[in-house]
Amino acid sequence: MLNFIEELKTKPDGHKKQVALFASLAITALIVLVWLISFRFLGNGYNDDNLTAKTITPVKEVRTAIENSTRKMVNGINQAKANLQGIFNTAASNALDASSSAPQQRQ
Image: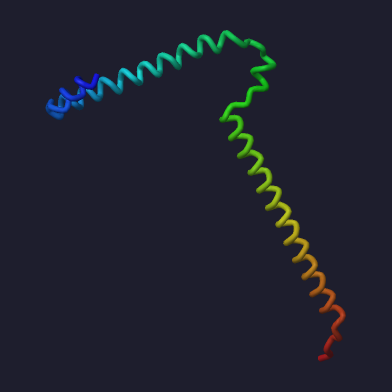
């Protein structure tokens, strides 16, 4: 292998790129093949529906986290809205009370 690399160093850039492309395609194909074969062995090992239903996948975990965060944010906004409405209602009520208890001017 070391001899092949030494010989490759002396070759033109086009040849080096071809070898690099072929090597990367071969390694990628090998990884994909192993990945596909693993489905066959893992898929037949456990067919328990209860186990599958309880399995947490990264996608489910992210979705749950986003849903929880969104729910907390909406609850916080609703609570802030209710607090602001209470403040404005109290201010309006105080202003109304102040205007009704003030002596009226005669014209």
